[in-house]
Length: 164
Length: 164
Length: 164
Image (tube, chains in turn blue, brown, red):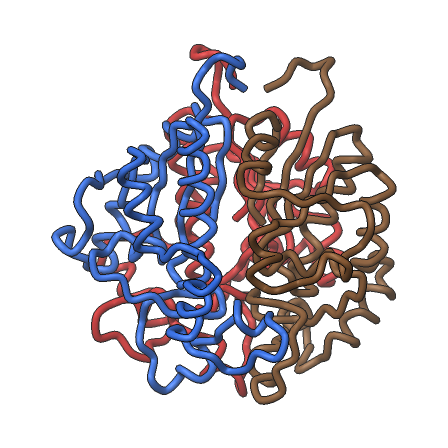
């Protein structure tokens, strides 16, 4: 733990990329930044898609994200967050977005913009980029590339480390 | 890290609310409390339901919890933990509870009571409460309300931080 | 945080056992070990199966792993990682393994061997072992047994703690 008068720090590994699971890392990161923390987000695995310019987020069962699965849509694109609401049935991602908006919850795009403005360090995992054949040109500006070692170095110096 | 003679501390973010995934946070929290740790559990997202007085936990595929999904029951209410047992088939949540009992594993209700008795701090996420339209009167006694900032303040001073 | 000249340490709780989710802990652990960290991996819950000699890993929706589910194969054995690839459809675990190989990514078996050679401490959760009725003879050599208290003691002294 750092001393009271030092700047605190937080590092997050972001591994999930569905609409629902995109919220915890961005809410924690932007809140910590607002509290004066140095924040680093390392996007890897299914979470890497959250850095894409064109963000197409769906609801899933906590599995992977932004993908279209026509055949399996019924089973995979489960609106988890809405199913928890009283009386909620098979709602769509679009309906969830409306609810969040109505409730005054920022969109992932808005939270991500906030993260960039707050100088949160956004690192894309190079290995995942290669594996998924993502193009870095499809990612938002202002990110850097790194590997597991990059993350570990940051985490070893951080006050809070979370794997999300 | 705190010095050897100081009280150690642990903070957990509890984000999942299914029968199987309710175990890790409560086992870790009550064990740490028994070892003399100061423990804080921050219940948010799908995990918030674990603070409800009336706990109806089902098995899921690691997604959301305590919800009834008739149509999707076959696919969503997957008895993960039992499927891992040799020869286990499509068992129900009730059957799992029997197995845990037979094996001498405490129920979530029992572990939660233990957590309250051990003075573990239980914080319900205000934002999730609003979003899911949960009523604080349906929650167990002795919890407090807080937001992401509340959690981050606690975590920055904790020796162990886990996102579950 | 330890001083700069001390050996850093990392502890991981490994709770998931599917082919895709087996990667993050083994990649983080072996990378940290290569950087000179003391690393401990605590295998519990669905992650315990990753210590089995005979590793039969399937793709799932982030739920449990290495289990056969004929009826539900279509829905449960979701090739998440491959679905994220452009144009990917319903690929099998075998096809994923081929892709990883083609991309030069080590297999879980190889990473696990690397972990043993790097003196990473591998602890199997005794309670999960009992619950799932696993036989310790089916597990790889060189592991030790422990409980939640064992993990917590290690974690309280570690610079990086992650729940995976």
